[in-house]
Length: 369
Image (tube, rainbow, N blue to C red; front, side, top):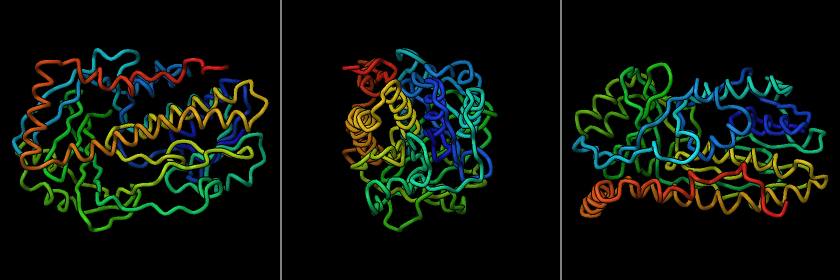
């Protein structure tokens, strides 16, 4: 089988198929396997699949185990509450630099016999294999082949991504909430802090992570926040800006030995930290559905039916978070009071509410197999 795209989803698919005995080739148009952007969060649901593929030691070595998620009042600089992550079932919740995760996946793929072609700009439908997987991300040509042209729409939100030095940062994901804006910070390898800032605005910005911006623009948008957050943003020397666009979940995920996974099938807004995790889940389920199944068409139908409801729920939850983080006025005060009360009265409630997401186990045998 062939995979087009050497990102996290594509490499996980390659590894999963190789582990099941398939002969796998990966085609990546970049001259090296790397990742633009910076940090990501691998939650227990994604980690279950990676650990089932033999990645546990590598994940421990490359990642930082998270202790908590802390919603913050960005204007006052105070924690609204704190949700402990140490009681999650299964693998730990970890923070990574994207390049580190890509590197350990690439090493595992090569050790499993996967052939990786770099600098290879190919069209998935032109490859000859029993199965070709389009894992090229949000601008996937394979998606267009299977579904026709589809135009995304601008959500009215833009995001900045940056990395700063922060050798003493605790292993906590902080969500700094302000009216119509928020910032997420968490540590990654090398004593650095990943910074993602989002603003509601109508001025359009291009989609994608490679658009450089002036750090002063970021600081201006958050000029009225508390001193602790200003101190973080003051350290930003290089920043990239991208527009957040809504893409519909693809109607067709697979046909005639050609299929999609990850952002190629269901681009996800970054308000639930699930883009990479859903791609990892897709890759594992796709390989599991095809393993020992001579009818590829039936296997692809099984894959799509298992994944569509899951990703639609996650995308809806991410969209809801975007609204919750940006409240203002009385609604903001009420929401913050509710969060604070929840953290005091039922500190384990957050974990319970997220069990549908973090507790999901794609490594369990599918029903009916």
